[in-house]
Length: 432
Length: 116
Image 1: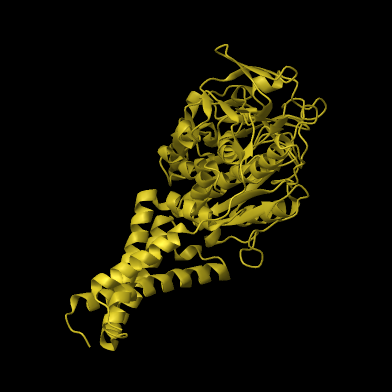
Image 2: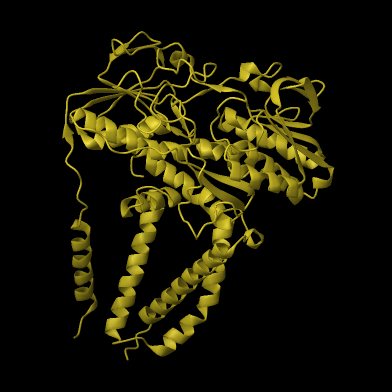
């Protein structure tokens, strides 16, 4: 057979055109005129809005969120490690919302699940048939006496949970500390918190930075936990305990930060034996975490659980509210035993989508959330453990026999560094 | 990973490289493949002296690919922690080597007016 260049290109082009027309079969959208309100346009709200816009035909989807910026929160540790700029975690809320949905750029001031109405701070009343609560949580900085956010980045105070700019300032303070040496003090709050691995990661990263600068000899590292463990999943706690031993990081259990004295550089902890003080040259503050006030003032939280925190009363498998069947929760706001991470959101969104769409179609949903949470636990820059677990504290590795969950691996770091943000953004678009 | 479909994978790669760069790379890869196939059909097979010369590029491609990934991810050889890491390193090296040979062969074949 003889073929000149032009004929060959024509043939190749035809082949590409045939390949391009192949499409995957999709479920027919459900026709409805339902009014769906999504409270919060963060990771959970945006992902669900995109999914519902695909699955429903004719629904009025309204998102209520006053925040213009979307924060990729898993990036905060990388910013705090000095590996990424603050802009790494910042995009616009509007970029992630599907066309055809309405975005009310204001915060909710009142939720009335009896009459199915939300009132915004600006006074707008939004009625709903179905409500998805995806507000996230609030960081209670005021609970730490003597601390204020304007201190972050100065006098050895870090707080990377506060946002991308604060994470960058935390790096500035940690960078200075690992140059000069002294007492490094790390901790977590007594409440439920988002990404319980992050405080540990930042401890490991600080240790690694000091080692790389050859200053580890003059750096003293201490981790204080209010609980009796370093991580809620016992097998992970044991592994971290061994790693802390290996890296020479001291631990205090039953210690809850209550106050700091920035002048004297001392932190006060509540313990079973009364208040105790620890010195610091670098302190990484993580405050107690609670539901936003508008949720705590509504009838949605549990009456007998987490009463100081206010998480909403949802079924832990379907995420449907226990008392208001047209209300669902997704993300940090859910009163479930685990799952305040973006990875949990990724697993929760298809469950809420399934039950909500089924309910609109007059059917029963079948998807169940098993408490899946994942944490690429960085143990130094370049290595991480891909820890995944469920409600029962079972490890649930995505790649069993290939990526060991409790081994410090380069591949797990690669996932955190390059694949995670991409997967997260695909999730926001409803694609993952 | 949940719902790891082909569509998800495309979305993930678009996010890693940016939509423009990713599709530019896909187009470049397709063009090189098409050019290679064209040369293959035109020359009625692989010309061994081009292939031999192209093979010199294999180690260069392998090392370049590994260093590129390490540079992009703030990591190094000291971070290899287990067997899977060694496998990933080898796979990245093989991909780089293969791509370099493929590209070198195609460039030589296209530049030469010689038809066997």
